[in-house]
Image (cartoon, rainbow, N blue to C red; front, side, top):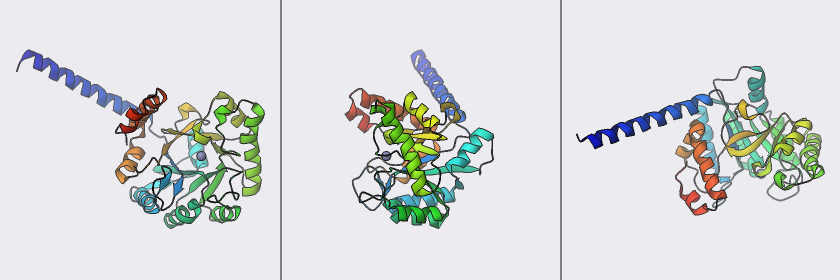
Length: 282
Ligand SMILES: [Zn+2]
């Protein structure tokens, strides 16, 4: 073998070894973190990037069951994180944003069938107001089952990072907490920031309002390192890409895939949307 070829092979081997080490380190750093799945709509409709077909959602729930995952509440996840309270062997949190009525029509019967707990984040002004959103009656029925918990997704789904006054922020964060608590009949302990937008001021108002935690839509695992007011989730939506293999990869290898997802977001922010769209990231 030529000397140059040997050097090339040695370099390739070292690079592979380093990449494997980095992968192991990333997976290790996220050990114990609970995956929080982030859904939106579940209905037999085509072409909506937020939508999962009911059969796709059911296949994912069946997979969780077969693989021994146990859906837990956000409180159970937080208790484990803060006090070391025990969790089942493979915990997972299931969340839905926006409070669409298809959550009641299609997702809820499937969750009931598997006995899975889930959380729905409601937009106060949209709920029981606009077509396509949950009614208070449907919410009461889901809550009564003991499986579904409701939390806040603000008053109007405003991009919180675009609001400049503290009063506007308090209206979205604090008023939604109070009004939703009254309507739903349980204390709002968590918020999902619309579009995932959060900054130190939003975080501070969320904390001082008495919320126990807040969620972004950023892809990642909710690790204690990032703090309870910027918890990441695993988005299960994204324009006709809902294959089972994609779901499995996103669920199991979040720490490995998340940096690539961040790279895609960076490309988009820099104006390379076309390149970002074709990156083969699951
Ligand atoms: Zn939303």
